[in-house]
Image (cartoon, rainbow, N blue to C red; front, top):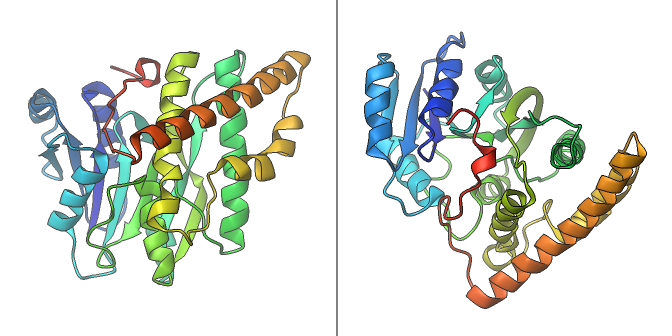
Length: 301
């Protein structure tokens, strides 16, 4: 059994699209979809629009994404490592080969986690869109390289899958797309990157939303050092310089894009500085599910 958990936050139209894309995929394996959302009105909308018995709804208690995922993992887990969890978001959608690629990857019993290739749907002809293309290109390059070398790397929170029956809970004090793969890695499993499986993402269109999103992400990942001091890091300030500097310098095609790249360097440094200040002030990372909205990342709602 494959359980596809779609976490959303009052984005019914986008989530409905995400659900329908999965329902239209043809695989032999049985699967079901659970939409996890804190808004009861979203549940009512799904009741009216989706009659497929493979789709269910779980009312998110509003204590954070990791808290909700832990509840669902406990509720839906099995002791069979042939079964799979797929985690994704309601504000993204996947390519039509998603379920096929994931089931093929897990035919290797050594694979514990598999993750998709994020693809930006923002145009490249403006600064914010260009940044999304540059950053996603760098992420793709790093994950592909580490996966081919069978080394550890953090998965994409936009879509990743895990075997059931290995973990039954995970810590709430950091981003689930890094903590869960690391637990599998410590248990001797491989992490697999699936570049032919694409997940389409709307990135922020203004600097305010971009900073809000990235600072939240950095804080979730920087807390790993407290939870697991020996955890290899793929997302960190030093690794951005190590793996991303030359990639970014050679990525621009025009003088305008070169200028946008220079501005990106400045703002990446700025958000890391702010995230470190926030973590020092608050002492601990808290998983507030969408505690700060980023309106321009919404697609259909």
